[in-house]
Length: 135
Image (cartoon, rainbow, N blue to C red):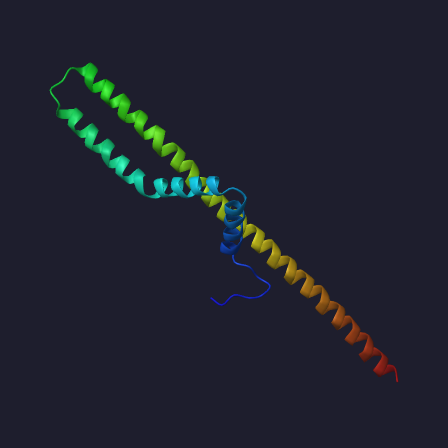
């Protein structure tokens, strides 16, 4: 879709915020990039690791205490990695929603201002027509 000079795309707002963060604190920006990559790529392998650990636990001829310990470690592993990743995903989604809301507000403000200008123009035209009718 073609962009309009008075309407920004939410991606532009997110990009501007990202560049500002990159200029202000490059180390923090790099940390965000690394965590985003981990969130997107490593978590799938961790889930597969957990499946690979849990399935053998079911058939492993070991005492129940060993199976329970390995199960707890596996569950902790999911919590250590998955919950922060889910939070990062929620934060990213919220940032996108905030940017969309900001763009929507800017667009509606522009449209309302334009409407006010048009109504003022129409009111002026109406007065001119009324003056011409009286003559």
